[in-house]
Length: 293
Image (cartoon, rainbow, N blue to C red):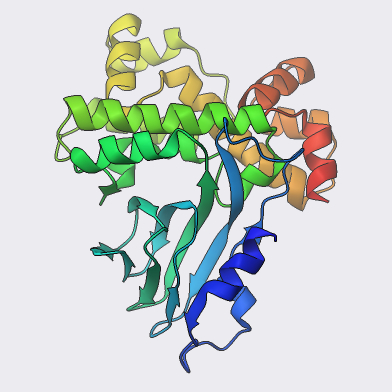
């Protein structure tokens, strides 16, 4: 049975009067994998961008899966088993569905949700639970957004099985490192925050380490080391994730040609664009567009 059907059957509380749309509107979509999921790899089950109106409450029976949640805006709560989490904008949460779970929206709550599984998940989950790192109240501060960008809201549906496994492994491994060596209240230096903002806003420009070094007045090797320390990716790798994120939107929502999209997001060479796109998503831009359509 497809995971979405399992999710539907596990709904143990009828939506409140706040639900103005069919129940399927508040559920993610099935993740279409390349082949039958392998228990040895992390694999997606369902994912999507959800908008819950204020006052809506959804409660589910136990399911054999895990969930990754990122809140874009609004407020509410999620209860998984005996754990209760207060949600606001930019929260990250990894939760176990095996003891049942529920969502509640205090105000209009908008979030990205990915259900997934894999044989290594219990190991990662238990380690993060022991280190109080299942829930991050400020994802922007943690810098993990660079890893989630290609996966959420529904990017997992277009990744190859091995690309998805690699990216989830990277994400969970960085969470483990973060929980073992950092404090969640760590203060990011101003020059690094400004550098990240610059990359987010100017990803389409021709940006080099030399230029970043001149702009910040800091040696490029130190810049790379410290940027990765706080944001888990070197500056140029972070830049590529920003570019590919925008390219995914353009491939899905426009009829622009591949080379036009590559140019718009900052690549002078189409081959270079295809190389980086495939490195991040596991597919060429053309294959990605075809599967989305």
